[in-house]
Structures are given as structure tokens and as C-alpha cells.
Image (cartoon, rainbow, N blue to C red; front, side, top):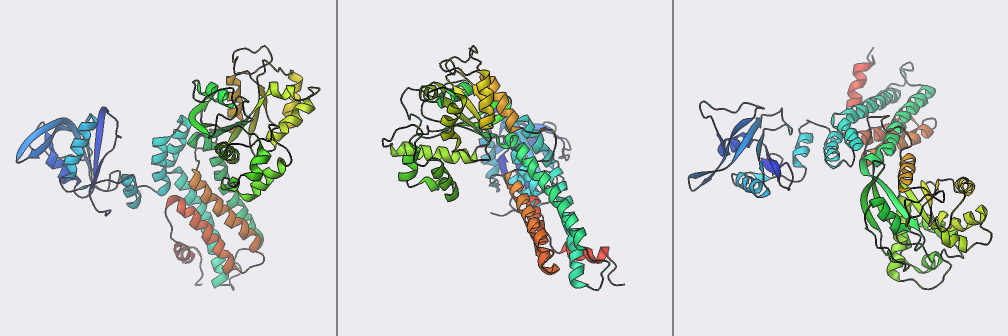
Amino acid sequence: MSNKDTIAAIATGNSSGGLGVIRISGAKAKEILEQVFRPKKTDNFTFRPRYMHFGSFCMKNNQEESILDEILAVYFPAPHSYTGEDVAEIHAHGSTILLHTLLEYIISLGIRHAEAGEFTKRAFLNGRIDLSQAEAVAEIISAPSIEGLRLASAKLHGKLGQRITELRTQIEYIRRRLCLAIDFPEEEGECLPHHEFHQLVTTLQKDIKALINAYDRAKPWQEGALVVLVGQVNAGKSSLMNALLGRERAIVTEEAGTTRDYLEEASSLAGLPIRLTDTAGLREMAWIMKNYQNTTQYFNEERSVEIINSIKNKTLAGKNSPINPIEAEGICRSLALMDKADIVFLVFDGKTILENIQHETTEEIYQYMLGELSLLPKHSKKICIWNKADLAPLKEEQINQLEKLTNCPVLCLSLKHKENTTFFQHTIDDLAKKARALLITTDENKSEIAPNRRQAQLLQNAYDELSMLQNEIDILPPDITAIRLESSASYLSAITGLCNVDETFNAIFEEFCIGK
């Protein structure tokens, strides 16, 4: 397949609706449109660019013409079109069968079906948009929230691309000054002193870090925050999931270990899009980590060792009976999901805890909770949920003390009596608001520019190159340290899809009077 082929596809998806659009792009776009379109007014008709024309879709069969639908047609001549090529659009009624019939007839006239994303790909290749704008198109289509839509729209308008260009300009300035030190060492006045170099690189790193932090802030809006429910068997995780979803999604029984694999559902917390995940109950952890061979399949060896050490010589459920291998697999996946989670809801069975301690002091409760708390990554955001508070109420003073000891919010719930707050219980709405406050730690409207995951990783790579450069500039010659700047610039260029390392050397002669 060639980028010079004329392509066509249904641009409005596969579901039926009131309106459907077929898009054609390529050199034959106008020719195809002229073959299938019959205007209502035929006198001296010609396609006026970017103007809607009313008429009919005409199909030929053995020299006989048949009218299939009344349509609107519009022609966009190159380069002023979405793809930068000649583009034609046919606006017909939104019947799935009708649209596919029209499309197949158009294809039969000598063009081909467009590949997934090919219209936007051509827009990028033809210089209509940069790579960050191309990605923004997909982000707009799949945005899980209005805020995510706003952030994607800013990128579509080129704001991220403009910021990347500004960062690359800063790098190019530093590179030019380094190149002077390499090629013209006698020009000391034009070379960059070390203290000034460090200052410029530090400023550049600060600007890059601001974009990386913007991704961290915007991630819940762009992708939906991963919320993982964790706890012992029968602690109430599945009941909590059902309560958060507002429907019976997870099976709830008295039998331990009914959730063997994790369940994931899209939902929202106080307007924040989330991916809510219910996991297998944590029990017999010492047995699993000792006997189950695939624990390192889900997280790195260092994390596995950390988990093993945290639960060595003890089990969470206080039992040592063998576990079904399927349940063991589910528990290992639960541990892996904790590492990936944006926030963990750690569910505790308050009734069971009080039955297994002697004096019901806050310190005893905390020591009992440490088994599960020790399994969480140190950096994780979490909320401890004291379930069955109707059977095991806590005093407000105890809750405050537990929040200090666990370093996280502690909410008392009774998932069987959601509306009853007699025992200083919190509601599902309280949980949603608390989780949102933890996930959105700063003003979500603070920045209009927020990279996606791929772009944030490239920014991090560029930042890391500059960090190594800071350590090397005082001990290595300029020609070697310049490679770090080139690598950093290449990572930034990969965000917009534009890269030309030769531009640095051309700019040297334009900016500095070297030949004097």
C-alpha cells in the first residue's frame, strides 16, 4: 500500500445514526465524487471548494443509473484539507447498511479502504499537523472526561508542539555555544563558561520537569485513575465495588476466595474517571511467596524480595492450609496491581480485627493492620476502609490516631447499611471525595499543556540525559558532552515527530561572527 493511493472510509463509526460521513482522500477524490454525485440543480454545476452541495448518490449498474440516497457533498482541494491532499466528503443518512453499500461502491471505482488512522497519518506526513497533534486526535475521540477533552484540545491546537519547540530552541542555543568551544577554542569570549552552562541546563531541566509533572496531574483525566481494592478474603472488597458502581457487578458470598481473578470496570469518583479493580483476597501470603513459582512474573525481583521480607514467618489470615493454584495466581496479580495503582482502597474487616485482639486499643488495631499495609509500595496513595462499622464501631479519637499511624485517611463504612451513620460512619460519597482529593493534588486547571504517557516518557528521557550532562560537563571535553544535548534534543523531537540535527551547525554561522 502506498501513501499516494486514494483512500476512503466511513468517518463516523460503525453504529447507525441520523447522519453518516464517508471521507475520500487522494488524487482521485474529486474524480470519484463527480462520478457518484448528482446535483439537484445541474445547470453549469461545478464543485465550489469547501461548500456543501445538495444532491443524490448515484450508482451505475450495466450502464443503468440508480439513486440510492439524498446526500450532501463537499470538496476540499489540497493543501487546504484535513490530510493536505484532495479530500471529498459525502454526508448521507446514518444507516450502517447504507453507508457500507455506498463505501463498497466507491471502492469499486478504483481506490482502496483506508487503514486505521490513515487520514490522520497523512495529515502528519503532509505537514498539516505534528505528531503530538496527531495523538491529540485519538485522545479527543477517547477522552473519558470533559477535562481530558480540554487537555487534548489544547494539544490539537499545537500548544504542546509549541512548548517542545521552545525547549529545543534552548537546547540548540547551548549546543551552538558548545560547538564553538570545539571548533573555535581560541574564541574564548564566545564560549560558554561552566557556571553559565550549569545555570542554563538547570533552567531547561526545570521547564521539562514542569511538563512531566503536568502529565502526573492530568493522568487521571486523560486515562482514568486506576483504583485497586485490596484486602483479606471476606473483608468486603466486592461489596465495596458494587456500592461504588451502583450495581451488582462482583459476586458476594460468605465463602472465602470467591474472587479468583481481578475484575475491572470503568466508573467515576466525584466526576473523576476511574478504572475500578476488585482483586483476589490476600491470604496465606507466606505460603504463596514460598511455594508459588510465578510471583516474579508480575513485578521485578527487588519488589518480590521486599514483599517476602515484609510477611516472612507469618500469614495474613492466620491459616496454613494449601491454596488452590488459581487463587494463588489471582493473589499474585493483586500484588502486581498494587504497584500499578494510582490509589489503593485497603479494606479491613473491622469485626474480625476486634475479635482477634485483646484490648481493642488503637495500637493493637494498627499492629493487626500492618500485615496488609506492609504489602503496599512505599510511594502508593491509599485509603484505609474500616468495613462492618455497624458491628465494630470506632471512636472518632481512634480514627484520628489511626490516620496518624497509617499516614492515610481512615473511613468507617458499613456496606450492608450504607445510609446508617450512627457509628460515626462515612458514606460512599465521602470516600469518592476523599479519593479525588488525593488523586488531584493540585488545581487541575493550572496548565493547559499536559503530555500523554508516551510523551512524558520521552520528556523523562530528555531530563535524564541533562542530569548526566550536569555531572559530566566539568570533567569531560565539550565534544563528548555535546552528545548528551543531541540525545536530549532527539527525545524532544520524537514528541512532535520532527528532527534535524544539522540545523544546529547552520545556525552557528548565522548567529555568531566567527569569520571575523
